Length: 91
View 1 (cartoon, rainbow, N blue to C red):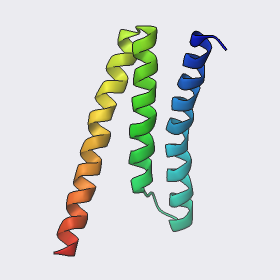
View 2 (view 1 turned 135 degrees about the vertical axis):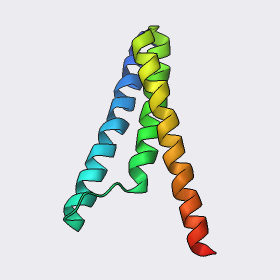
View 3 (view 1 turned 180 degrees about the horizontal axis):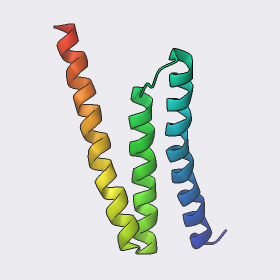
View 4 (view 1 turned 30 degrees about the horizontal axis):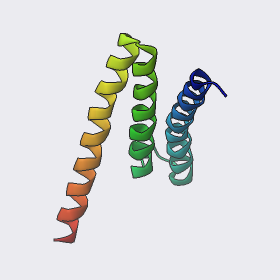
């Protein structure tokens, strides 16, 4: 397989992780019969975004790069807030 083919596989892998966040959120919401955003949603968002950012950098796509890099900041911030909230709940 050529190097460029591997980048396509990487891109689809990132898209798969990004899709999984929606699936996880939907399943959690259906189980609770209310809109829920589980912690796994943020981890899949971060993983998918990081892989898609690498793919966008490889493709030299400034629009795609900007979109994926900004999202990562939000996903990391949400994970920090969740960790803080859990730590405070233990105190």
